[in-house]
Structures are given as C-alpha cells and as structure tokens.
Length: 443
Ligand SMILES: NC(=O)c1ccc[n+]([C@@H]2O[C@H](COP(=O)([O-])OP(=O)(O)OC[C@H]3O[C@@H](n4cnc5c(N)ncnc54)[C@H](O)[C@@H]3O)[C@@H](O)[C@H]2O)c1
Image (cartoon, rainbow, N blue to C red; front, top):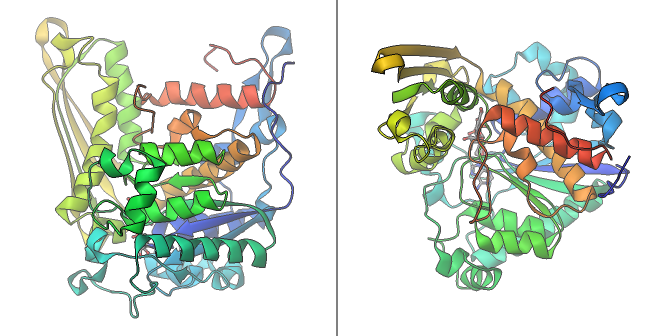
C-alpha cells in the first residue's frame, strides 16, 4: 500500500457554520441530528451509506468510505448559522415545510439551540427576500449594521472565532447555503488577485463584492474551508484561489447538483456515447420555496441559468462533433409557483436525432423535493471538505465536482460534468487518500 497524502485523524469537534438557515440548511441539520440518534437514515449520502471497491484482483474488497479514510463522526458535528430571519433551526424547519413535524420534534431541543447570528446582508443581491408580495419578510431584518465590506469581514471573523471557542471546535467549515445572488461578472481589476480584492474591500466596492465573497474571505482568514452551494461567483475568482493556496485551505463550488441537472449530467453522456445528435433541450421548473422567490428576479435567475446550462454545453462537445451538437437550442427556465413550496417539478423535452437524421423526443418529468435531494449532498460536501482540510489539500477540490452543477476549475482547465466520470474521480481520490492505487475500473 502506498500512502502519499496523510489524512490527519478526525479528532475533536467539527463546527459547520451555515450561511443561510432556510430550506436546505434546516433539512440538512434535522436529518443529521435524526441520523445520529438512529431515528432516520442518511439516504443519498455516499459518506454514510456508500460502499466502494478498493484493491483489485485477489486484493479486491468493498468498504464504506469511513473504513478507507478517517471521517468525522456525526456525533462530533456542531452546527451554527447566520441568517436575516431570526428563526432558529426548529422554527425554520417548520416554516419551510420540507419535513413533517413528526420528523422534526425528536430533535427539537437541539434545533432550538441553533440560533442564527446576524447576517451580512445587502438587499441589492437578494431583494425579493424583502418583498412582501412574496409573503413573509424578515421582521426585524437580522443583519449587521451597514458598514464597509472590510469591516463586515472583521465582524464575521469575530463571529467565527466566538463560535469556535464557545463550542470547543477543533475545526470549522463555512458553508454558503443562502440565496442565489444577483448576477455579477468576474472583474479581474478587482477579483484578479488577493491584493486588488482586499483594496476593493477597504474602498467598499459594493458593486464588485457581494456578501458571499465577504463571508468566504472571512472564513479563509480564520482557517476555514469554504463551500459555495449556490451559483454565486464568490470563490470562483483568482483572488480566492490565491487566498486558499496561501492559507492551505480547500474551496469547493458551486451550486448543488441535485435534481434536474443531476438528470442532465447523466443523460447527456448517454447521447454522446451513442453518438446521437441533440437539436433542442427545453428545461423548465416550477418551484415555490424561498429559493424560487429569490430567483424570480431575472438577475438572480441569470446566475442560476448559467450554472444550470453548463453541463449540457460541456458534455456535448460541439468542437468534437459539430454535426451532432453545434445547433442545440438550450432553454432553461424556473417559474416561481408558491403552491408547490419545496416540491419542485421539472420538465425536460429533449429533441434528439439518429440514423439518417431521423428525429426523436425524450420527456423527463421529475417530481422531486428540492431540499431532500440537496441535504445528503451538503452532508457529503461538509465531511469531505473536512477530509481535504485534514489532508492539507488546498485550493479547488476537483474531486468533489460530483456534487455541483458548475464545477470550479482554474482558468486553464476543463471542468468535468459527466456524472459517472465525476463519480470515478471521487472514488479515486478516496482510494488515494486511503493509501490505495487509483484505477480505471468501472465499479
Ligand atoms: N435545494 C436544492 O436542490 C438546491 C440545489 C442547488 C442549489 N441550491 C441553492 O441552495 C441555496 C439555499 O436554498 P434554500 O432552498 O435553502 O433557500 P432558502 O431561501 O430557503 O434559504 C436561504 C436562506 O439564506 C438566507 N440569506 C440570504 N442572504 C443571506 C445573507 N447575505 N447572509 C445570511 N443569510 C442569507 C435567507 O434569508 C434564507 O433563509 C440557494 O442558493 C439555492 O439556489 C439549492
């Protein structure tokens, strides 16, 4: 057995600070607390119930991830949060109506103890949260006073230090599970290096520095890995790559690959493998939770649209097969429909063509529960981010592309979107971290 990277043992407590205590975060927390009491199964979480092969031939064996690499035990996880609503995790779980009351009550006391800290909130980046037309608005808005971006970062750093000390945490992960922000493009004059980024914070450049970037900066300055669960630009910029390398921290993003996009990243490779052409791909959704409310603003939706479009564009390589994929009409829509709450419904109509250009159609109608799909992804991401931290793996964590819609890469790299290639990458990194040889076998 060779062992190049050492993963330190998972000793002490792991703090997980969720930015946003809404549908996904509360579902993650309730499920984790229920699972550790043995009252629910962490279905969908590879880190908990997945088995994978290590070794080949006579050496071959199928093991749980925790038997290959040292994983933090769920009993050692402590959750905290920031939000602009004052709801504690119990109140939030009830409000979001993802889970039944009977599945929340057994952990009520622990949930009530998770009270959000005041957020760094700039209404420009998620203004629908304050729009009473959509229903409940935060009252009061549970946010830190308006201040410069630099001062906000200092206040967040203090929050992280206090949380770590009060909960006797050995390590802390900071996790954006908050709203999708208003679209901003990368601007290298600001985002191009850590020096320009810090100068912009001091100059309070609000238009180039959305709140998520300030949380990420504060997290990494406090030695915490950062995960971006929304499609926000945030850590996907050279300044953050530099900070992650400098402080030897993993960064992961972006946008959980939970429902429709998971299906796309499984279907598109099928067409490519069989060399079937694609002429059009129409994807639409109805969604009634607070995420749907925020992305009803066209500029918040734009951030999401880019992320949701990218798997099809990257998997069906137009340059390689122009006759099959150069004229795809790809449309992605999300319609806010409050009646459905978290029960998202997505439709995909795919116009494909085969032998002698004969056309065919495929329809996919996925009646899902958005946060039920996202919660196990969150659990795996936070535990694997902790593994990466303990292994001293800094910068973009390509091996976790499996979990995200728009895997981050450095500028000169190609992202891997194919779900099955991503799964192979994940398993090979686990093999490597466990001291086993990575391999090309399929299982
Ligand atoms: N559910 C899924 O399957 C899925 C998939 C991919 C991505 N996501 C993303 O995950 C995120 C969370 O989704 P959700 O359904 O839980 O949404 P949600 O609206 O229920 O929760 C988000 C929470 O973030 C809070 N928030 C907004 N700005 C904040 C700030 N600056 N600081 C602290 N808190 C802030 C909001 O008040 C809200 O409570 C969204 O960005 C969504 O796009 C979800």
